[in-house]
Length: 284
Ligand SMILES: Cc1cc2nc3c(=O)[nH]c(=O)nc-3n(C[C@H](O)[C@H](O)[C@H](O)COP(=O)(O)OP(=O)(O)OC[C@H]3O[C@@H](n4cnc5c(N)ncnc54)[C@H](O)[C@@H]3O)c2cc1C
Image (cartoon, rainbow, N blue to C red):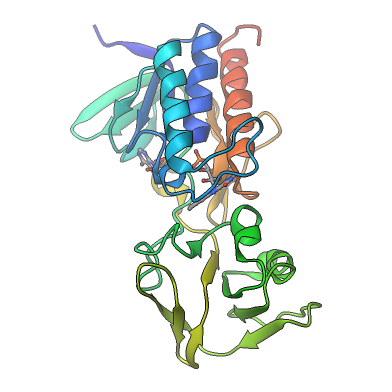
């Protein structure tokens, strides 16, 4: 007979781990699926400075998470989910060619911020960053560049300017900036270059010598995984219980929007697990 899980958690990052860990403590029969355990955003962090009680780099963070996962017996199933389909009761989760069934789903697939500029994956964690709040302080007194996806990121550019000697801003819109060390540049950024670490950004308007490049933008349409899901650009629209527009389907972590931070992802994973439990009729 087909096994039906109480909850399928999709995404192996911090949000997914927290959702799986909390589901287990709440006594839910949980299937935790992800493309890679804890994700590359954990492994590639240069230094985790703002996660309560933790000090160290991404590799240390990975090891601490893995030790806890093993101790708590949280099972991880590797697999890339290619579709989540609404059934009469719950959801079918496709990891081709396999199919799983679950009464509820927690989507924790993060945001895919890579692949738009040549060299960006190569230099991730070696001068390329997607998070001004996390990595801005590492570039105190340095020349850096910020590539902004939309006006919501102007505030983060101002934040970066507080650390930088000079901040070159590239944006497809006209922004008003207060900081005097912000230089608004024309042209589209094309490539990040350097020897081992970022040394320059090549744009249509010229070559900029920089120590860091911040790529501040959102991506990945989550509705490509679960059809009919209400989204706001790259993010899933959720309420305070992290319920989405689809009954029994919850979302947590970067996929619900900024701030893109481990602590926010972990907190949302926990809340989503409690919401799934309540949806199933239990007290949480
Ligand atoms: C280099 C770097 C350094 C950072 N440093 C810090 C820091 O110091 N402090 C801080 O607070 N934050 C930091 N961040 C941000 C932090 O990494 C994110 O906010 C956090 O990882 C979000 O967790 P998440 O689980 O929501 O998403 P992610 O970590 O992105 O995890 C999502 C996971 O889902 C998987 N996935 C996606 N689609 C599918 C699918 N269809 N099927 C199966 N799996 C799928 C992905 O492979 C990924 O593993 C950093 C980010 C980067 C890139």
